[in-house]
Amino acid sequence: PPPLSTTRLGRGRKTAQRFGTTVRNVGRFDTDVNDDILVTSEKNPVGGVENAGGVEVISGLDLASVLLEVGGAANDRLGASSASAGTDGSFIVGAPGRRLDDGTRRAGAVTAYADDRSIAFSLRSSEPQLAAQYGTAVSVIGDIDGDGVGDYAASEPFLDLPIDALRSDLEEDVGRVAFLSGAGGADIFDVLGTRTGSRLGRALAGGVDWND
Image 1 (spheres, rainbow, N blue to C red):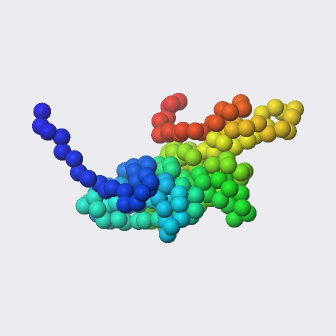
Image 2 (image 1 turned 45 degrees about the horizontal axis):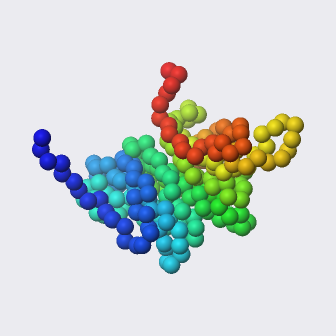
Image 3 (image 1 turned 30 degrees about the vertical axis):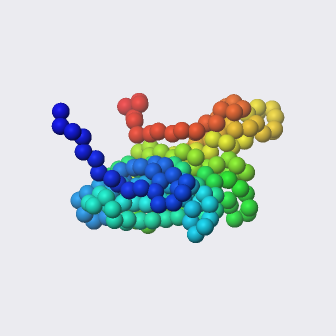
């Protein structure tokens, strides 16, 4: 067989950056005919701030030109997760370490980019909680609400929830998966874990219609 050929997409430029935490085909992010590549670096330091994370979209034409570069804030871990349908340039990234404006640490957040490079939505959990880490995993799930726009799922596996209808006590790491409208990020519905330590949503995958 002919020898395999390889092309270097890029390399990390900083110590402990974790360049390539996730790598996705995002489809045509720019105006040429080539699919472009999303690369994330969840521990990328930004301006001396540790564990900020970062997102780059790299041109599929030359595998060098950076079409989009976004960095996180301290301990965001922006890019710890990502997903894209690989068609029109749209994608979603998670920042499970995000600290909220009210001071809640590691509550997490997700940001989705539309096919015109604008931010479609950037949001925190509907139930923000210390160390719940919303955005630990994200996924493309197709158009589940029928509005013509592809939708997303995002998880917070370390969310504490009550699991006994007769008690209000919170159980640790029950987890939740939110199904989000791709048009604006509104919650379509949620799925909750059912056991202590179940960590529902530690990983996500979508895109298959099982009942058609």
